[in-house]
Image (tube, rainbow, N blue to C red):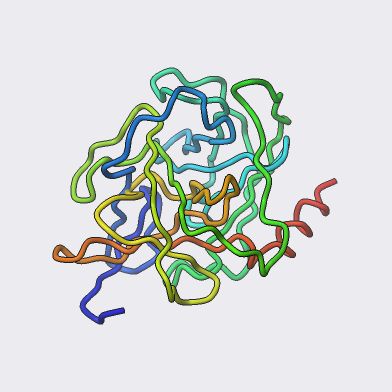
Length: 236
């Protein structure tokens, strides 16, 4: 990776790198069929109106990025159009204890819902990887309600998605990557990277330049399976 690349974080909430902002949104994506991704969760701060994505992994748990944490988070289930949000659910935020904003290491967080989700046709859970060494299919998909351009505000009120291909030799080992002029942007942080119908990544941040496009970094979920299961087990 060239030293000329610069990091731009993907959230409206915080930057994982000092002195830079995040670019958000699904850039060059298509509108999702309404409610075709029933595990998707819209996350916002009830006071600041900043937003992230997430995904429902159990009736009482949403997974997202640690840098999405604020003091007043609420989650919205079964959302297609953010202009018509259902009643929000308050949560207890549990970011990974080793998360560091300045480095974006361990950028993973669980949100414990204070009211369990009612599963139906528009609200469903999605399963996680089974093992830490699970092979990840190279053809993937990202989705969210974020910016539709990397360089200026252009949020989408409806869920959008885009097909992506994993980049080889992504580092560090707890991350996976995609590259190019399409993909997540600001407001899409915390959303899933779905590969083979399984969420293998969590949108974390961008690295890029004007000539070659962007590399998007995702937290590798399988790397954190012990922490995920221990955290959810401890909540019972």
